[in-house]
Amino acid sequence: MSKDCIEMITSRQSIRKFTSEPIPDSVIEDIVKIGISAPSGGNRQPWRIVIVTYNELRVKLADAAHNQNFIAVAPVVYIVCAVPEESAERYKERGRTLYALQDTAALTLNILYGAHLHGYGACWIGAFNEDAVSKTLNIPSNMRPVAMIPVGKIDGELPPRRPRKNASEIVVQERFE
Ligand SMILES: Cc1cc2nc3c(=O)[nH]c(=O)nc-3n(C[C@H](O)[C@H](O)[C@H](O)COP(=O)(O)O)c2cc1C
Image (cartoon, rainbow, N blue to C red; front, top):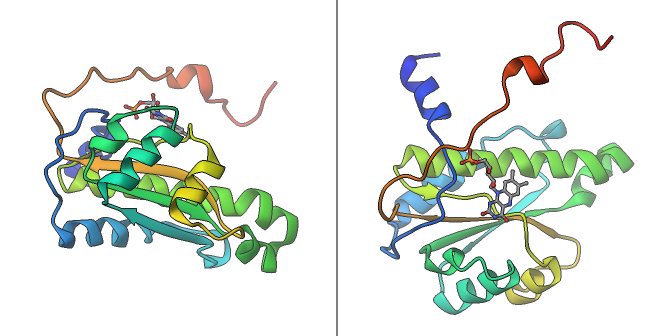
């Protein structure tokens, strides 16, 4: 992997302060393209992405996310939905309860990187009322909204980096004792 590529991965950080400057449609679409290049169990791709730009809807999403108001400031919010039955068709319970969620997590992370690659800030939002989001966006009952990703131009300086545990605290060589 090139140094640039490593830098791209390690320099991503959550951004929670955006300007409301619109994002070009071509970039919004390219971020989706990067998102859906994520792996999924059996390549089932048990996911849907709702792209929200209407101000009124973004305000409702921020409310549903316990008033994380920066969500309403970002010009675009991607909502990643899992479709558990599309994984369960092949993988039964494991597909329904594990793969579908892992697949959508991989998609979410790719969207974060897609935004970062294009020079925009983004944040993975998991704390929200699923029923309120489903109601706001008319999400069908076989789909579960699992993550929101507000994306926008970064307003101001980058926030301090969040620390990581040392590898020595979390890596086990060969097997646990
Ligand atoms: C599953 C999940 C849920 C998260 N939910 C929220 C959230 O609701 N609000 C928020 O501001 N950040 C949320 N985050 C972002 C984390 O706080 C952030 O990734 C973590 O503190 C590490 O910081 P970094 O992304 O800047 O490296 C979430 C991240 C993950 C992976």
